[in-house]
Amino acid sequence: MNGEHAEEPVEAAAPEALSAERLAAKALESRLLGGERKLRRREVAAGAGLSLLSARKLWRALGFPNFGDDDVAFTERDQAALSTVVDLVRSGKLTEEAAISITRSIGQMTDRMVVWQIEALVEDMVHEQGVTDAIARKRLVNELPALVDALEEMLVYSWRRQLNAGIQRLAVRAEAGLRASEEGREGDEDDAPLPLARAVGFADLVSYTSLSRRMNEKTLARLVQRFENKCAEIISVGGGRLVKTVGDEVLYIAETPAAGAEISLALAQAFTEDEILPEARVAMVWGRILSRLGDIYGPTVNLAARLTSLADPGTVLIDSMTAAALEHDERFVMEPRPPENVRGFGEIRPVQLTRGLGKGLVVD
Image 1: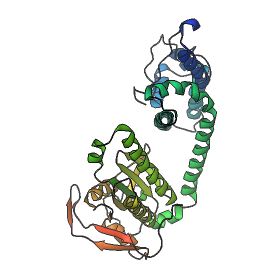
Image 2: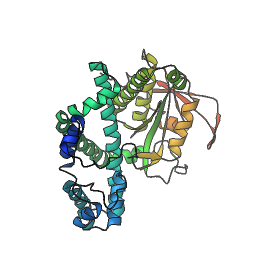
Image 3: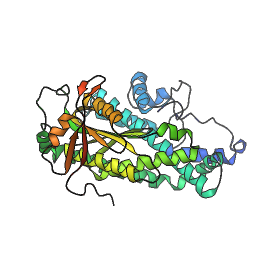
């Protein structure tokens, strides 16, 4: 969480001196934080049996701002949460390094999620109620209490479903994944030391920069939302995972070359047929990656990004090793293209991927 979204202690003031909006904000804060802020940072750390230095490491991982010794910024729930993490380390279930990394994942993901949800609610109020953005943000404080429990329930539900899906990928598909990881490979590739074999893909909207300069804020927001929604839907239906979106580009992975190919072709087709969005350049590479901090790294990712810039609008490019992994699959047709010199990789032989037999992904 960066400073823009960091919470700050609410200044004490007599109730009669507070506006109705401030009173509503204080009531909502008390509900969200589990009570009034009554504790200072040293009191919370001591209550959890931690040094202040160790407590600050965890708070920074969560994205909390720096509080001073005299700031009454914490509640008893803050102390209970800190104790939960400490107990996991002391019981040997987590190392300190793992605890900080997991805590950071929670802080960063929930920060992005909250900003996303607030902006979605504000945008909806502006559209439905015909008010300005500033007025919608003020009104949202009064409307949020009716949504908090439902949003919290959906968050926990989704986390459990996602965790279960991750476990299934580990357990049920492990053997198939190990077999697939050797497809089209010789064993001496640059990415050989990395642990996970995955299909890595990029989809990049064509002429996004020039389009965005001609759009107002509302139109641009709708275009970006439409792009992200369509990508997320196709990648999910194809059994892949959307790693991240960066403006006009989406990064995704799949567990087999065929799954990655199906998703890539479906993305290219969807944007070609979309009446509002421009076409997309798509590229996919089968190789090994390192997964850390919710992101992925390695030469496979870099090569997929480079190939994306070489693809023609509405087409999918793969490299020769990915083509070798798909060559016996009748669902795909591969057309070699002239060799290209690619920064960081030297000469590579791109292959254009097109549809063979079958219907491909069906998004109903």
